[in-house]
Image (cartoon, rainbow, N blue to C red; front, top):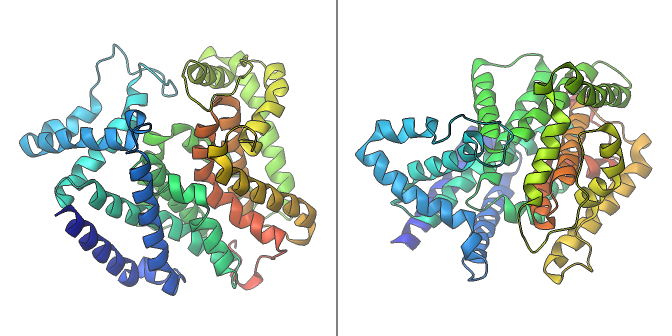
Length: 414
């Protein structure tokens, strides 16, 4: 029964990918079904990996699914309670939105995903693998939106862009399983897609705005810091659209933001953003895991953050090293290839001017990586979170490395 449901939903989703106008106009043509099947296959591998005896005890994907079975029963028995239950908690207060424990907001990211799975269970008769197929259709939506945007900026480079957006091994693995990461990536892809439309036309339809807001809510529920990091990236992209020296605009605004980041605690203790980063790092330091790296605790001062910067860069951009563990060997090879592309990107930068949209993608991706470098002392977790930002930075890096200029007739900005 489960195998039949799996095949049925693969067929249905393939039909939708071929005939829905959004996907049909993507320019992926004959690639879209193989890419979808590749993602489903990666999601299947993800599921089987976490069924291994050594991995199953800490496997969120199977824990979420098991919890969703009870939630589906609640939905059928008491639909009102099913939805209102999402807004209740057992704490005295909801807690800090950035807190990693004893907080309604921290629990919300898991609870909301379990509710999504519970709704999918109605369509799939409680089949994990059929849920996997339907989720990957949603995951494809944001990635296709991102591909459509980049292919408009860089026409005739569709194959390279498809490889950078859909086929990076770590992104394929971590963002194709039954987990929150694929939804976050898809929501981010749609937000950037609508931002590109805003840059191109100067306006959005009501439907565009509603979908973008729903995506932002989804990101807030699952990875709230990724939503807050969107604000400066999009604001800079909008302000830089009419300026020739776009890099100067981005650097100036980001540097001003960094100064403000450290000055706000002097205005009000409630705005202690450095303290938020320090607290998040402390929460991670209390955890245990095989990929833990000894880390110097941060302090909420500019001096401490500056001193820690080399370690943050090393964690975000360079780890894992091939000498740390053979289990990360594929990731090491992938990372070396990406860092080589980044080096070529630096050498070719002046010959490949970028649009403000491309700068927004780069600055957003690098800011997320640095946040991870500052807060997470686990190589495995950094590898997973890094996979979410690859589809935003790799297409730009590839285009710079191959000295591809923005096509003037299809430029994304007005």
